[in-house]
Image (cartoon, rainbow, N blue to C red):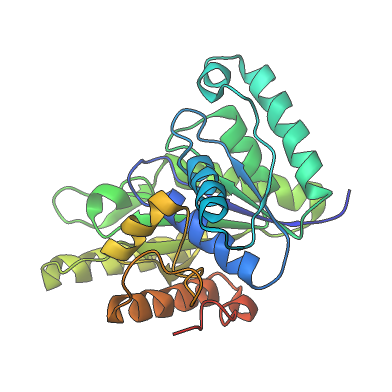
Length: 277
């Protein structure tokens, strides 16, 4: 099987912005001219699948062209597959994964905000795991447990254990290290002391379990208003401009460049469309 680079976007908490990170990473790579396959393992919500369906429809309706990913839906009825046995779900995932690895340079996998058999399997296939988290101790709880009195880090949490086990298994099987990046996502103005406390705990945990820390995407209107069209700031150009351009779009493109650099994909961060201010 050709060795595509596998990027898994995951954690076990909803609302952290996994799909937003997934679609922006995918479109930035697409505009860099590489072939990208997308697998959406959130079988019930399917936000990433809906995004690319919206993209196909909007481009066709407006008579313009933008790069599309390779897609291989696990099922025509995601909700039904979500109720199926782990064995059936794993078989569908393995079939889809084997197919897209033959056809793409990168395979990007968006996972659900829960622990499932196919999500664990996907983590084990990753070359890069990307974990977005909101800037709060609520989201940090999925990574590590703090003492309620001192706020000192006590131990890592279940999701950290999942990634740890995936990394150990991959090292034994393929003698390959899975890179893990935790993104500080949807940053918003917060009380400075609380942010400093959180930063200290994240840095301490990163040294213990071995992840890198990077910048995510802020909570900007532009990311939300482009979603119904199936577009991101990487797509905006003189021929693709469904909303009025503003300085917010320039700042958003800079964030996307910083995100790609943090993921070790800096060679793709200056793609022509992203840089088209």
